[in-house]
Amino acid sequence: MPQYNPPLRDMQFVMHEVLKVTDEFKALPKHADVDADTINAVLEEAGKFAAEVTFPLNISGDTEGCKLDQATHEVTPPKGFKEAYAKYVEGGWAALSCDPEYGGQGLPFVVNQCVYEMLNSANQAWTMYPGLSHGAYEALHAHGTDAQKKLYLPKLVSGEWTGTMCLTEPHCGTDLGLLRTKAEPQADGTYKLTGNKIFISAGEHDMTENILHLVLARLPDAPQGSKGISLFLVPKFNVGEDGAIGSRNGIYCGSLEHKMGIHGNATAQIVLEGAVGTMVGAPNKGLAAMFVMMNAARLGVGNQSLGLTEVAYQNALAYAKDRIQMRSLSGVKAKDKPADPIIVHPDVRKMLLTAKAYAEGGRALAIYCTMLLDKELHHPDEKVRKDAGEIVALLTPIVKAFLTDNGHIATNACMQVFGGHGFIKEWGMEQFVRDNRINMIYEGTNTIQSLDLLGRKVLGNNGATLKKFGKIIGALIAEEGVNEKMAEFINPLAYLADQMTKFTTELGFKGFQNPDEVGAAAVDYLRVAGHLVFGYFWARMAQTALREIAAADSQGKPADPFYLAKVQTARFYFAKLFPETATLMRTARSGSKALMDTDAALA
Ligand SMILES: Cc1cc2nc3c(=O)[nH]c(=O)nc-3n(C[C@H](O)[C@H](O)[C@H](O)COP(=O)(O)OP(=O)(O)OC[C@H]3O[C@@H](n4cnc5c(N)ncnc54)[C@H](O)[C@@H]3O)c2cc1C
Image 1 (spheres, rainbow, N blue to C red):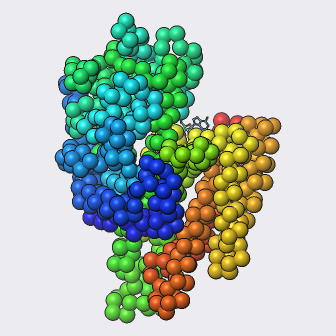
Image 2 (cartoon, protein in one colour):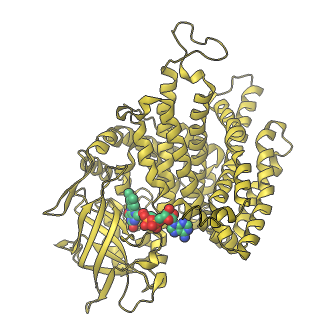
Image 3 (cartoon, rainbow, N blue to C red):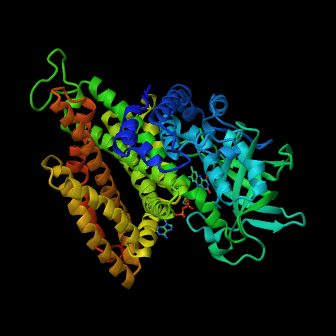
């Protein structure tokens, strides 16, 4: 059976020692009083909830899956999910970073980020029920009318009701402009929706008394394509003006998908038969309103893989110390045993360190992004808010795609550490691999994220936001450029930062002549950008750790092993993972011809 220990120490390191989030919060009137002790206490309790309440349901939920009653269209999630959710609501976890005006606790997003990382480590399938609700809360909070907010937000904030996002239809996934679900205006100002949605996560269940579906649909006179999409709130049960639950609405689960992973989450085909809904945001501007939820979800999906990377690493590490096979190439290490533990073998270490470097780098990036979200929302200076928003927008496709691709690499590596036992269900490792796989697909596939990054976020504004982030990296390079102890981290980072400008300009120029050049290079480009960002955070983490080691040294004290581990992992990252950027830049530069001039090969 797998184990999970919430990585509280590492979260504290990133938040309080590297990013110094509470110092940053002092500038935000809403969070000026939030201190480190409060954050740590909340995370400690959240860690207990994840480890003790939802983690024990991870394997059983995967084995059991969800059940649909065809007669009633009701879905029963795996045993224990409903009770765990009730505890989540009772503990006030759903309200953590929500607006106090609607019953929220108003804590910074940074706290929510860490809570969700732990919940994802413990049980991704279960965590998607509250996770999607939070996205629905954000979309409604940003674009709902006052009446909608008053009626629905308190229930989403408390967690009494959950939310979904209904975009995908059988013939339309990436290209939402193709969607056909219709919304007919009614005399009373509501709309009647008819159509079919597929793949709707947490789409039906009995964990709450109501479900609020956010549905994309077309008005009768809507323009073709993505300019004619509106967003509607369609509750499972109609809700009276007084908030009381009324009749069953015409939206139900037609069937459940049978899938590779996240079995405990109900992936529903949703049928709308004249379902009553109200519009969210302006007519034909539904995608803009839905993007609030999609952006939150993209960061959330990166966080799912971060959670899986962490839990897979913890279990692989414990196994590698325990499992004995063969002797070390450099001589016997465990004389009292018939063989050495596999952790002595260089390649086993490489697999473990890969997962550790991706987990800890991902954590630093994810916490940084949510700190920027807090700034974007609450900083009194408009320029700071704008800059923060632009950088989050730039980093969002990187969080989504780089963290989920890394999760794929890391969970596979950790499964490999177990040899054949990793492939066997009882160890839980193959489930981490299966559960992670969807993260690279939904919320816009990772290819679509890379097009968003290179096409829209970088070339779309002539590299202006990339330059802003480049300045942040430049400041670190200037600060540490002469520090010999930092050279092994700063030199490769400075080299890549310098190359990045030329590389981007080159791709932009080629893309201007032939747009397929952008499509051909985008996935490689995102991975290079991901390493640039990770390189920055690993250098900052090494900087903090080296300072602590030097401080202990100057006092004649032994260094805290936590900091030694950080420096060693940074060294591993820059020596073994970061250099793939050279290959990626080369393949990106090789252009589109080898892909597009292949009609005979693909005939
Ligand atoms: C378990 C699960 C849960 C989901 N949950 C939800 C949910 O809650 N709500 C919801 O609305 N949807 C949900 N989805 C749907 C998911 O978001 C889509 O599957 C995804 O966006 C891809 O759409 P598609 O499957 O139609 O693939 P397609 O759009 O058909 O894409 C097929 C392939 O073509 C590639 N491709 C498409 N266009 C381009 C392009 N322009 N350039 C390069 N490559 C391209 C894609 O990257 C992909 O590899 C879920 C899906 C699954 C499997």
